[in-house]
Amino acid sequence: MNQRVETVTGPVDASKLGKTLVHEHFFFGYPGFHGDFTRGRFDWNEKRNQGIEVAERIMQHGVETVIDPTPNDCGRNPLLLREISEATGLQIICSTGYYYEGEGATPYFTFRQSLGTAEDEIHELFLTEVTEGIEGTGIKPGIIKLASSKGEITPYEKMFFRAGAKVQAQTGIPILTHTQEGTMGLEQVKLLLEHGADPSKLVIGHMCGTTDIHQHFEVLKQGVYVAFDRFGLQGIVGAPADEERMAVFLGLAALGYEKQLLLSHDTVNIWLGKEPILPESIAHLLRNWTPVHLFERIIPMMKEKGCPEEKLNKILNENPMHIFTGRKEEAEKNNQAGKAGLS
Image (cartoon, rainbow, N blue to C red; front, side, top):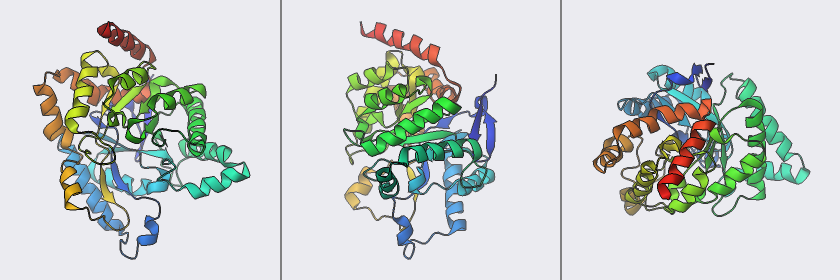
């Protein structure tokens, strides 16, 4: 049976996703950006045109689909994404979800948590958006976005994880997570599985924030996907160099885990509010943090280091499709192959 995937322009067959970047932000604003519109005004046509330029740049490298997991509290705008998709033909999948406690819009649900209603309301919000659409637009998210803090999943964050797992069990929608600096990946998986999530539809994001390959093994053994999705973001917020994360990625691929690996950049292409002015030292570190860095620099380097093109094509073209269709049996088979490679 064909599996349909919700995009901002409507459902498409999963087999039609093609080459996919699994974690890029067309627009992103830290909570509070609305209060800075005097300096950083929001002009719809300007943002639309900027988004079209980003989409066209990505599509020049054969990308057909982008997952944009911008959380509800960080400027998610499905209508704007729909206009970009309609203008370019790029398929865009948006999310429902909230950011981690330290950088999200926490007071709203923290207040409701004190009343004892928050978790039920989060579940209701996720389920309503997944089944009926976002804010009356009819646009449905294709994934649930969840996030945890560095070194812990706070009680606030656990509400979202439990609600997300419950909605996934009800609807089958995939879950994509944010790990802060690659921490808490295994703990995220265990929490989600405890509450009914399907491991073959879980993407543990930003795991490339750690170069400890044993942490990757422990997460991959659970049958989930691991995303190396911050290429180009290096030298700040605890991010390792591209060469370091590439070494871990290539090692895992060589051991037979390629069916559970995903690639992307986590770029913020257009900031909401006033555009930040980066110090020269940071701007230099982020010079390659673009949504085409993989294709222009990283993948050619991976091929030079012996990673077969067939594996890379699988990771970019097939694995994203299977996030939505599920692949439990093959993931388990792949785990056994990986374990054998370690013995």
